[in-house]
Figure 1 (tube, rainbow, N blue to C red):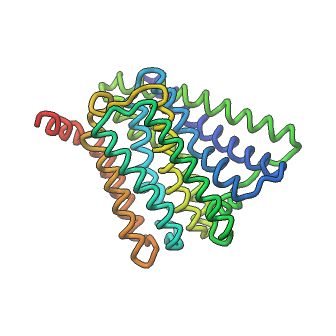
Figure 2: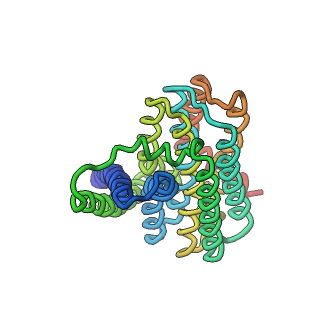
Figure 3: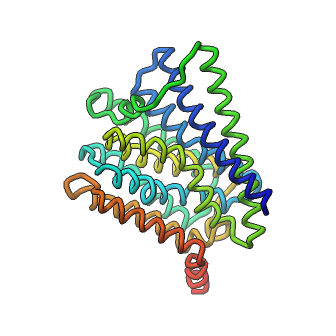
Length: 331
């Protein structure tokens, strides 16, 4: 048990540091080659901060722990809204432009709803994965053309400005970037192996470990970026991080997983199908009326989000989801 705990903790640390070096190094390299901040924000930063979830989910699916892979995505999306956005709002009220919330927020809501519908009605396979990746590509292109015409409203470009680049020669930057990528891969493998070992040792489902421990660990890059943005009073970046990360989790990560293994929620993750997927949808939906009240998320609302996340963790470990699963599938 101690060995698995050490592997999990070590994996989390390596994963967090690796993702940080990868993103900072990639941004520095892109700027050296003259890539615009808008393109960097929409591609390198968005992909880099989602790479921990992607690597962990693919590794878990490869090892047959599909429940952990799905739990990582669902748990990360819940953590992004309740924990990360709640933390940002508790530090400084989150204010964002109406157009950005409607565009990115509606895309996130649409993607979440699509995942729930498909997850509850069909087995998601390779064609669903291809479709998800194509939708993500179309969304990024639409964001690029819109933000290029409205550069003063570009959250993606603002996000790049908040990243502390790696300094040094081109070779040093490239070496640190590659090192970050290797660390992400190694950290993901350690994290998955350790998490699966803990789940089996404690007789806890892999879904629960994916929803909580793994989801929190892979959300650390977004949490760090969001806290920095909130402290600098760049609330639009904090909100953009969450909306973009949730969208990438659904289309990029779930889409990539289904390219390699079919996903049947009722069989692979019955607890998630009965309970947690609906919590994810509810947290996504409730975000909009809160933001609509002056297009801001207050400190009080941020505190309520943090309390709600604590309640979610309590429900995950006390078996509320298992009770719901029994009731749903028994009926």
